[in-house]
Image (cartoon, rainbow, N blue to C red; front, side):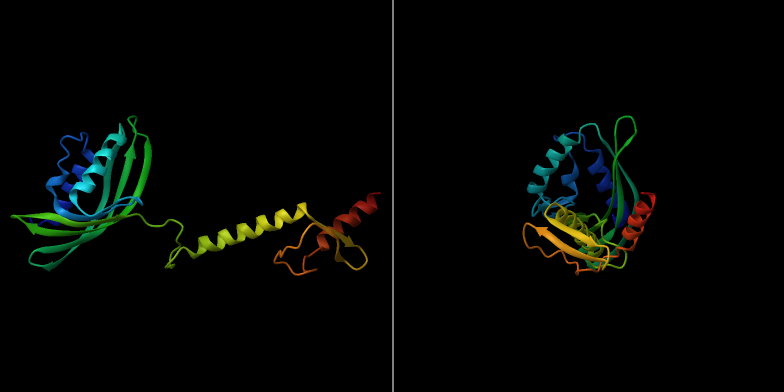
Length: 209
């Protein structure tokens, strides 16, 4: 078979329809010395035996969740007479018995097919999910790092309320230290806070009294 997209479709159907650990069938598509990288941190396998041991556990744990494969897109490139590189995207959807959605996974994959004993078999498979925190145009999730930094600064500033006591001088409109339990760099320069709204509140209260 030289229709590699159809071959990938067959492979995925075997994967999602595996209901018994006794007759998986997926080993008929994999080379004995396959290298396989999955979406999980632990899913790094260097041969068929390692993968099957993990896959059998996944089939048992899957239970009554039904898997569907959608939106398969694939391109191929022949590397030599015996090797073909296939890569693309595919979506996995997990469904409960009542049809409600358990999970959705938008994934990417890379497959190297090798001609072995008269048929094409998977020699290498890398299956991954994109980092949802990584913004368009970013090489790394930098925006997430900035959000984490701002959150830490906010929590840091919030914590100062418990040990830093200051007073507001109504004449000079400056912040004056009264007491603090220990030194701490809050990352805020002295007297840089805009206190005008606070003075407005004080004036309103004074007028009412």
